[in-house]
Length: 134
Image (cartoon, rainbow, N blue to C red; front, side):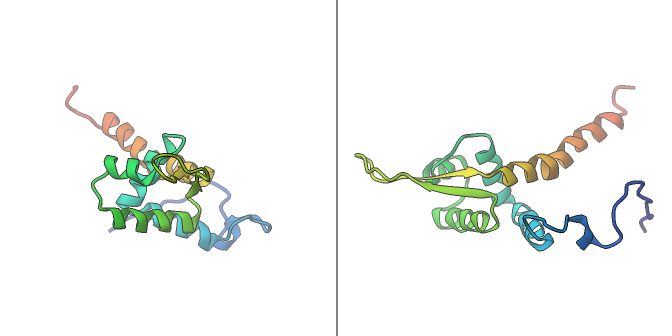
């Protein structure tokens, strides 16, 4: 059974009041972003895109162990919630037209201050409670 922790910050009682009155996005939209990046494949896509300028689906496919239709499904989900964006090169060259994906600012922020922050803290906790050095 868990214990209840008291928070010291000035957080409102109602989660709807976390956002300013003229917020760009609604609480539901922010929660949809969080839910989208909570999937392993989508997390990996945003993670890889946030570390490059942009990648094509072919480049992503070569980095990840997913089939083409699954990759495109997840790319669509991430675009729908605004974590990645798509750019299509307008000029055709000898290899045809290309579609490029990149992480949006929101995509980068949700990783840095969300999942990646939790993972960094895991290292801190592990180091703090590591008894093998004693």
